[in-house]
Image (cartoon, rainbow, N blue to C red; front, side, top):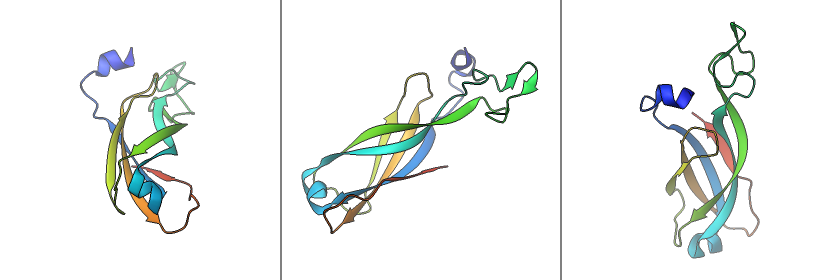
Length: 119
């Protein structure tokens, strides 16, 4: 219902993240798991921002919540350090989100956990 009323008015939100690749993963391409907090409809109020005429405490009245989801990101072969990859993510029952991923290449063979920030 909310999507129907707001159709065409909202621009996709952007979530920024960083992934770390080994030199081999950067050269060959890889599929990397990334945990990101993506926007979703607040479960407490159903996206209305209120419960029984009072502001929803769970979402602070905005109707949105952030849900941690695991996303698998495919990097192209020969990606360079500092490259930015953009993806459009549409989770079930959630708004479309732009995922802006920055690539960091490390010299060692072990993986550093991905970092995510919301803006």
